[in-house]
Length: 160
Image 1: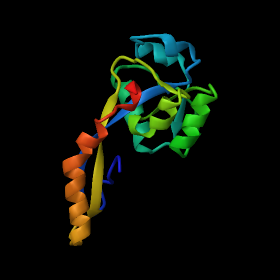
Image 2: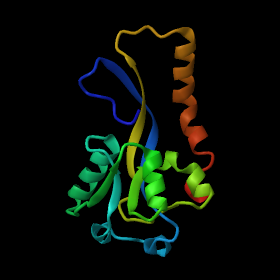
Image 3: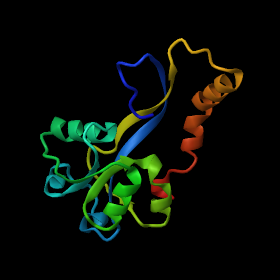
């Protein structure tokens, strides 16, 4: 998960970076630009996750930290819906790079070159506090911690 709840009785262990990137349709005017300033995005509209989602909160904090307004014109409850709306040129999106492999490979979406991006968060593996993991669950957890980074970095979808 991307953001473990703070008030739950959970053990959460970060195992992989989760880069959030700005995406656009390949035909969007910004798709051909490099070194896009964060301030320039103030003029753009965004398709976002629902209020309270980890990705949305991270984006809002990021823009606020640099004194830039963030304009959400449409809220979606899934990453797939955001990708389709961005592909239809209804606005820009901010999603985890890990969710974009197919769309980037098929050139249905593109990652914009925006200053101060990506926003790097973490993926967490989570289980209930006090829960004794089965042998298989513990083996999976050990594998995940040991192998996630090398597997995820074999091919960056943005450069594929």
